Image (cartoon, helix red, strand yellow):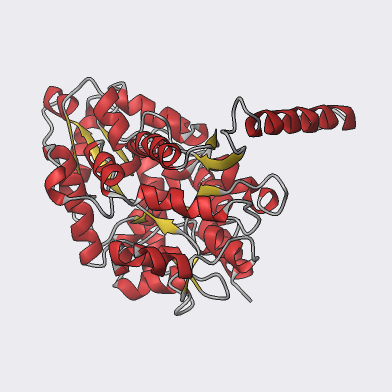
Length: 428
């Protein structure tokens, strides 16, 4: 679709230039013409999206004459184009970006992100973010998380949990599970009644996250995660944990716990299908919480994966400042506002997981459980990050191999392919 020729590209560039001039003029850029370019990919009706919109209002009120030029980008869009865009004159001043070695770590290693360490110390952000949550914001010279320099600032947490449609459970005479054996027993009962238990998105992140969680259930201890995520030892993708995770996922597809035709489905469609009442369960991120609370017309609840020793989760995405940002000081001011109590408390009450809110300000029982579950996971070192983090390009590899498993490829073959991608992508 990008083959329209140079004339189309020139017209697009002229249009962008005109828009930029308009934004910097008296009509759109404030009295002194300053513009803060902001990108993020949170839906406006999500907890984070609403909180960031409030932060924009707070920022503009505190900076007369400065206009925030916000551009909503898709997660996949930023994931795939950030290295190219951030190395160009079109880079934003501040943006939300995914955390982990393959994303923020890679960009820090490439010199595309501003080292925020002095600013973090100066503004006291390090005092607001717990040590376990800081790991994903700090990278070493090789781009490995847990390093000594801050290249991003997380102002919320996230983790995967099970969302339950309690009405469907009640209608089908099934009990909400509290351990893994009860989970599989519940899914057997749903299948026997012609109900697919779990919504899924094979074309995006959901399928790979099932495999990783099922592997975590069999992982011997935390060192298994550290070897995979932080290169403390060489992981073996055909060990007992990975083999069990992939084989169990394949078995779940065969048994009808997960619909085989979800192989080409996107996460948005899977989430909407759950919220419309079509599935009893959704295993996905806390980032869905605000939307489920708003859109679901049935009785629902959440819990950590039944019986989990460890589960997927970490800090939330990071605010990063591109090295090429033209307004770094304004970018730091915006980040600072998102760390203030007003925005943090709002984030919490809308169903996000703030890192610096007043605990007493969170009053909704479901939201309180959400934040309490995260706090427990973080304090007990049970957050195991995400499967696509370790090396560049791993997200696409995981999507491809997850789809192959759903389509009948032997799990061991898919794991061997993932091992090769992992080994080839290790930092040199």
